[in-house]
Length: 354
Ligand code: XMP
Image (cartoon, rainbow, N blue to C red; front, side, top):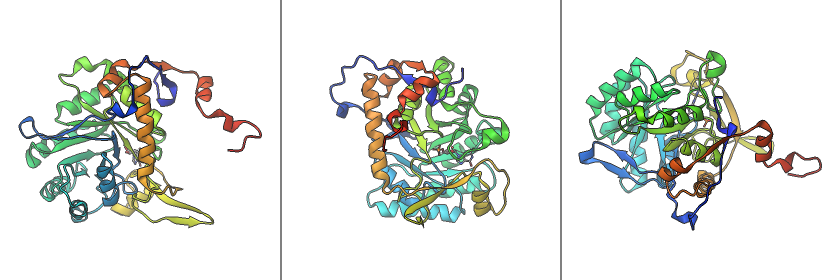
């Protein structure tokens, strides 16, 4: 069986964790070669996705201040993206330890990466839908030469153990796992391709012996709850990347749209016709949708809630940090009936006002 987040639960473990405050829910993020490494201590394992309705300057800054990370999107000109990088640094006041931005693998990507590096970016994301690709291999090799050893290279997306091993060997410092799992994705419908992200993580964990040292994995797409984040981390991810959970907040780019007494913001897949028309003036592929989601207010409240859930999740497995969680976690496959039991099922009962 190929398991997705809702197909499994984690078995509660004997615990000696006395306070949830003692739990470290995110590993440090390492940037640069060993001799000149920057080690960023993260307060949350959450990274905001490089999508044009999720991460602009305001989201990237807030994510950083909240102890996470935001990756500036690449759906603009080189000059516009460099301006975002500069703005991010001058808003902040203090020097940011990490500035992250995305690039592609063709066209101006090298020029873009060099300009981003010169502007102060030290985490570059090679951001393509099908990351297990020769163009990603070439891009990683060229980027390492052009931007140097002091830049963290994140790459993806992949959905196989072979993909993880290859990107690791091609020089990626961290790897985004997840193809077609995002809330706005239609890749699996349009192409028939994709593997549940949790399954890829679990298989990679089982095949860890194939790798000299453990690659840093980011579970990307399809995360709906803090419970899903705990499952992804227990299965081998160090971080998670979020789109829909952070979209619709005050810090996401875009205007609030009022309809009647309700308010919304746009959230769109970067392979949706709407997004492609907006940034390249044509539709090359159609593997995503554009939609409106409820306006959610400040992202800090959402992060607080997710962090509380993650902390509690670690404690249920008796873990004080990620390494312990990954060692102790016991996954149990669940039936559709038990999935129903896991939901707040009183809300479905007749007469209950929710
Ligand atoms: P969530 O579920 O957090 O997913 O909203 C966000 C992730 O979805 C990916 N992404 C896409 N995938 N078509 C796709 O198949 C698209 O148009 C698209 N846009 C974004 C991306 O990995 C993101 O982090």
